[in-house]
Figure (cartoon, one colour):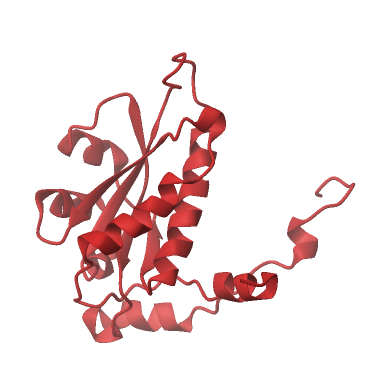
Amino acid sequence: MQPNEMLKFITGRHSPRAFAAQEISSAELEMVFEAARWAPSSYNSQPWRFMIGLRGSHVYKTILSSLSEWNQQWAQSAPVLVTTMITKYYEHNNAPYYHAHHDLGIAIGQLSMQALSQNLYLHHIGGFDPKMLAEKLNIPDKYEIVTVFALGYRGSDDRIPKDIAELTNSNQRTRKPLTEIMFIDQIPQ
């Protein structure tokens, strides 16, 4: 793949709220999470953990119930809901793992690109109750729940409430210019 092709691929990523009813096969899921498995991490510790809920399962229903009411309205169209977690401590020396969030972010970035290559889309969700989710799923204290995401094939807007579809479609995909995020030999102001 040429560099300009990769950038074009990356800019094609977006976060839909309407997902198709089509289920994701086990082989497709494994391929998506295999990309996360190969992400770099401090000491190769791989602190990420993904608890996957398939539509109709106890885990799916529990993740869905932890979302804000607004997010529940559209997220229930996704065939898969995922809780992301980190290990709080390094396994090799039990020291605090201060970079675990960073390492999880890299893993999710790779996972997102692999998903996109399979015509699957993610929508990251911050509006949820991590404490309630940890309690209901009996997550051991050595883990910290970080985010939730919906995963599936893109669906038609008639699968989600009209007001959410209109809001989603009215939002322009914009990014800050490089001059606001990239500073060569100078301090951001």
